[in-house]
Length: 532
Image (cartoon, rainbow, N blue to C red; front, side, top):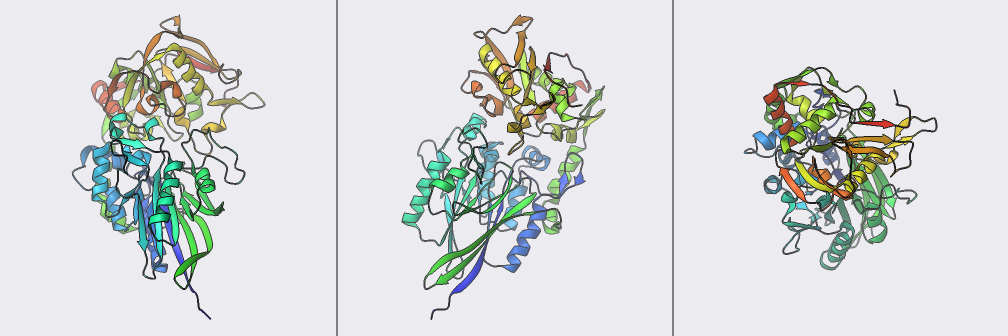
C-alpha cells in the first residue's frame, strides 16, 4: 500500500495597494488599518507556519498616495519605496496594473529594474514585435518536495481608454480573455506544473452566484468569463475593482480579490496530495484577511521612514488661503448644488489651457475641501489622481451626450428624493464619473428619463448647436473616453498640459495666494427633493 504525502500550499495575494505602506489616512494623518506595513505582519506569520507559500502582487502598486507622488517628483534618484518593501518581503512576482503607467514608462521601467522579482503580463505587448513587453509572462515556482506551481500574469486591456497616450505609445494591449486562453494552452504544451494560478489585474463583469451582468459588458473586466471558458485554471487572483471577494469554486476555480489600499490580503489554502510522481488538489479554501486587528511591522516602517518623513514635511507646507467657505460637509450636495471647490478646479483648468469650457469631478466622498489655510496635504487629499489636462474639440452633440452620461448619476426614490444611481456605487464606487461643467449653462432634470435630462444647454448666451465645434478642457482619463464617455474617444486634441493637476493647483495658490470661494450658478439639478 502506497502512503500518500499531503501538504498545504498557501497562496497570498495583494492587489491595488496604491502606494500605501504606513497605516495612516494622509488627509487627516489619523491611523487607519491598511498598508503594506500591516500586511507584512500577516505574510511573515504565514511563512513561519508554512514553507509552501507563494506571494503575488496583482498590480496597481506604485501610484496612489502622497508618499509615491512625492517620491516621483522629488526623490526619484533613490530606490522606489514600494519596490524596497516587496523586495524585503521576497515577493515571487508582481503583475502590471493599469495605474503602473500613470507616471510614465521611465518610472515603471525603473521600478521593474529595481525589483528582485519578475513583473508579469501576457497581454501587454511590444507594438512592433507583438512579444510580451515585460519579458516572460509567467513563472514556474518549484518547491523542495517537487511541487511546481505555474503563475500567469494578465492585465486589463482597457488601459488605452484611460492612460496618457504618450505613456503607452510603444505598447499594444491584447484582449485579456484571448491572451489568457492562448498562454494557458502554451503552458500546457510547453511546461510541467502541478497547479495553475492566473493573476489577473481585472475583475468580475457578472455576479459570481447568478451570472447576471453587474456592469456594462465593455470587456474591461473578464474574470467571470475566464473562469467559465478556459479549462485548467486552479486559482484566479483578481483586483482592479477594489472589492473583497473569496470563493472556493467558481466553475471549479478558486478566486479572491483582497480589497484595496492594503486593507486586506487574499489567502487561498490548497491541500495537495502526492501519489507516485504527481500532485493532486484535495481541497481549497479562499479567504481575505483584513488588517483591522493586525499589528504594524516595524521593519517596514524603518525601511521607508525617510521617504515618509520627507513626505510629511512636504504635505504640511502652507501654500495659500481661502476667503470664504470651500469646505465640504456633504459630498452629495456638491453634486446637486454648485460648490466653490468644483468651480475653483474648473477655473484652474481653464486658465492653464485657455479653454472657455471645462469639466471636472468630485473624485470620492472623502474629500473635505479647503479650510482657510491650505497646505499640500489639502491638495492631494482633494485631488487624488496624477491627472494631466487635455483640450478636445467636440461637437455640441458630443457635449450634450456627455452631460446626459453624467446625468445618469442620479435617480429618484419612490418618494421623489434625488439619490445616486447604483451603477455609480456598485460593485465599485465610481463617483469620479459624474462631471460638473463650467463655461456653459445647463439644467439636469432628474424627473426625465435617462438621455433626456439636459435642459437649456447654452454657451455665451446662445443655445449649443449640435453641429458646432467647441473646445473643452478635461483630465486625460476623461479625454480618452474613461468612464463610458465614448463620445470623447478619438476627438481632435487641441492642446495637452503635461503638468500634473496637483502641481497646477499648487502653482495657482502660490501665484494668487488668496482664493475667493465663489460660484456663478451656471448649472443646477431639478426634478426632485434634495437629500438634506
